[in-house]
Amino acid sequence: MTDLLGDKVVAISGVGPGLGQALARQCASAGAHVVLAARTASYVEELAKELDGMAVPLDVTAPDAGASLLAAYGRVDTLVHNAFAMPSMRELSKVDTASLVEGFEVNVFAALRLTQQLAPALVESRGSVVFVNSAVLRHSRRTFGAYKMTKAALLAVAQSLSTELGPKGVRVNSIAPSYIWSEKLEQYFAFLAQKRGVTPETVYDEAAANVDLRRLLTPAEIADVVVFLASDLARGITGQCIDVNGGEFHR
Image (cartoon, rainbow, N blue to C red; front, side, top):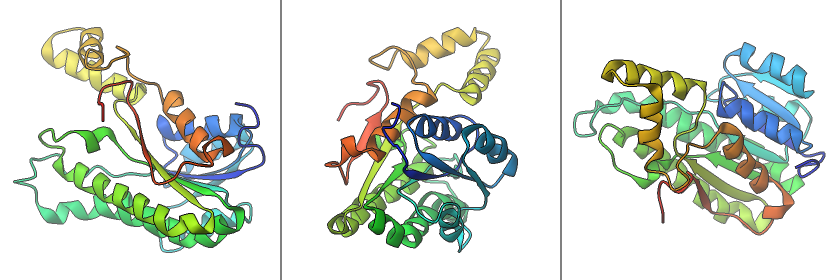
């Protein structure tokens, strides 16, 4: 993928462990100058040194977050919004609506504000936006209702912004990954295995059995789709949500 994003400036929010770091590494390996944003400075400072990028410790809900990202290089060619908050994991019929506020603030409003603030720079560069959504869009499993609400709203934001910014040369797309096989998920599967008295491999195999490829995708595999959407190879694609789930859900 060398030079697929040659000399582009890619700003990534939510650069924590797992997918966030993979997004940074895959974009950098494709030739991009990366601007790495996270609330926890330690997540981005060492990684920025490794990738010769810029670390911007910030809260994406801050009113000037977009300006901070733009200041790193003076331009932005692609915004990747990966920051998210998980709302209450209770059945939607029982959830306290007040608990939804943080989820909407990070998952929806921050994504919208960042795009609004960076829109002039994106128009100037004829750039793109990629929102990291979720396979929760494709199911209605119990306890995921609140999270699905925020991600469905994020999809609506992406589609509407595509319509509004498309005539100005800016593309807006989304990806919807399912399980991502990272250290965090590995630890969670180990916890489930211990609780059930089975092996972690059993829990993994049960999850993978629902996936056409019979395996869970890695962070790098998810990130590669973002690289594609940010590149000129996807110059004709906007307003789309690409499922990256190994065939777990079809639509």
